[in-house]
Image (cartoon, rainbow, N blue to C red; front, side):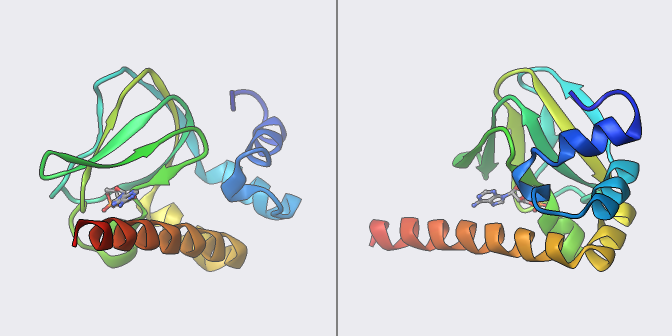
Length: 145
Ligand code: CMP
């Protein structure tokens, strides 16, 4: 999906909700820092307890988020993961496992941190999603009580 010239890649990135609305300059910057990888169904994309080395975004396919063997969320195209460890330096909070063949956008931790510094709008968008995940987790806990 994102192969070809960097300008084509930036055009494709514009369609990813996390990056929509960003200026051309920022899209070009992000295009420079990202790689696309493919993974098979069943691949462990992030491992609970491991050191976080990269931020990942699902372009195609589906994945589940598991904590201590329990599924806590499901992810699809446009969803990202792996941001928590890169932000707080703690081990991966959960495992993320591909449920179908996946195409992913990968950003190495150093590039992710510099993108957060250089693209304020990206940080805000990440925060909105992290808030949504916290709200969903809170609602789930409340429904259990
Ligand atoms: P990280 O802790 O780096 O690695 C595991 C990732 O799973 C984590 O970052 C988040 O991106 C993702 N994750 C953890 N908990 C949830 C949740 N409740 N909902 C969606 N994604 C989650």
